[in-house]
Image 1 (cartoon, helix red, strand yellow):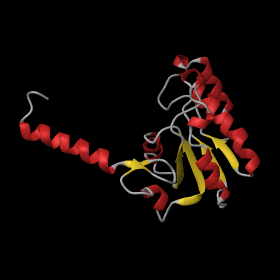
Image 2: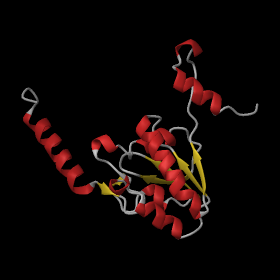
Image 3: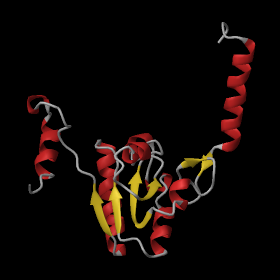
Length: 167
């Protein structure tokens, strides 16, 4: 920073100030955006019957990269982690339930990370949402494409076997 030209340093400072002033949380899905609601929530071609639930806003990009999902999103703002003092009250679950009350949602896809906290969050969400009459699914986990089976740990291999499907 000290070696940068003064105009470059000031341009960076301006960019940081602009981001702080313009970037906010979408009032519908909690994604980060400069427009409220965000472009996923207002997209004319997006399917409103499916909501993909993710832990953090940056997880949306991983799903969007596949170019196969065209539904809505909901960002929880983390995962359940009692050791870090994060319970259901700290996550944005209430607003998801409010979205379901509006009707029209047929499926909730739980796309939390395959960690202990992500799995606990997925199980909690499933038990909370199924009684509301919506289909609750979990993203598949297992062996990544191009990997060797000999390097897979037992939990990954177990998840891959559980998530197998017909060919």
